[in-house]
Amino acid sequence: MVKINKRNIDNFLDSNMFASIILELYPESRQGEHKGRYTHAVRKFNKLFPNSDELFIFSSPGRTELGGNHTDHNGGIVLAAVIDLDIIAVVSPRNDTTVVLYSEDYREPFIVNIDDTKIHPEEKGKTEALIRGIASRIKEKGYKTGGFNAYCMSNVKVGSGLSSSASFELLISTVFNRLFNNCSIPTIELCHISQYAENVFFGKPCGLMDQISIAYGGIVGIDFKDFSNPLITNIKTDFPEKGYGLFIVNTGKGHESLTDEYASITAEMKSVAGYFNRDVLRGITLGQLIENIQSLTRMFGDRAFLRAYHFIMENSRVLKQIEALKNRNFDLFLRLVKESGDSSQKWLQNSFNPSDPASQQLNIALALSEAVIGRDGAYRVHGGGFSGTIQVYIRDFLVDKYTSFIENLFGKNSISPIKIRNMGVVCINDMPEH
Image 1 (cartoon, helix red, strand yellow):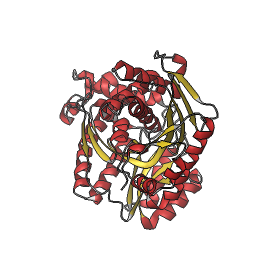
Image 2 (tube, one colour):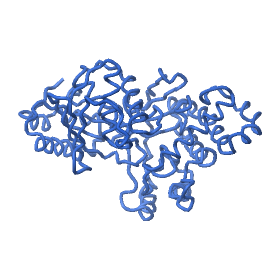
Image 3 (cartoon, one colour):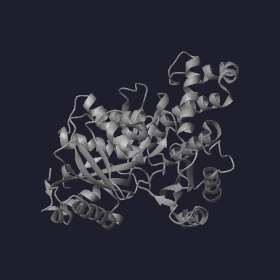
């Protein structure tokens, strides 16, 4: 562990130790950019909080879902990975119970007195709800909390489908864990605490995939058969990017207002599960589903049946994706990525917002990807869907052509290259020099 304060922070940022640390977190080609981000964040923090001395620096990454679209909430299996886009934060403890957090993207700070752990209805959907909800749950679990000052910068943009909310939740949970609990809260507990804050205080019915992938890092397979104790498997393989680029395409419309659409997927899947006297779809076979198709469609509608069909097929597909990665069979992996995307479009039906059928940016992006990429890559709906982003694997020789098409349609910088990183949320102070 390295102790960082205002007197040594400049030397630390210029040290070989810090250079080796950021090399663990970001691509070598972007080291200068990221050193600049940390330097800027420290300077802003020192200006905003001139009386703070001891400093802690955190990085909480975004995540990309590689397989298992909308299955976690029904006991499914997912495949996810953290990426080189992240929220960074400079933090210092306070002597009271107030959290004061400035973000580069907001003019005014978020201020929360965590002595008050009640739900505030007026905070639903706001940053304050996540901070308060995390503090409330940590206290409820018997752990300690305290006030802190923080300055954050993020390139995990809201609505990007890279799970900015879970990235922020794990950041805040880890700050409480590191500053006030000596890192004694188990990682899986931090994930449940973060999910609780989003579900109960923030008001969004999310699963646990985002939090787990961000907390554990690398590529992970997550089996949610037991929600309280999911089986987490680190996929020990070099992600086969040679000859390919991995990209996220932002179609220009966020998904912040689509909570009801996400909730409908969970609800419809669980309504089908209820027909079989189960709480979730996990354990129901394809044979059972087809055998009862007439009753199911009559009682719950055609879409609920199709979404249940997607769940069953997607669950088995994730197992094949995991094996393909372990065996370094990238051709098979890409074929399964495309199958996942097809299933999401046709059966899950989350590639456009049904309340605005004339607006179908995701489907436009997928159609363009099919036309330009063909068999030289793969593409699929990314994250929650309905709006937002798609995920694309492209052979290197097509990247320039594809980028030109995408930016012509959705605007400059609408396509972002991403890299898988091996580490989840971290406190920079605690990272060893390599």
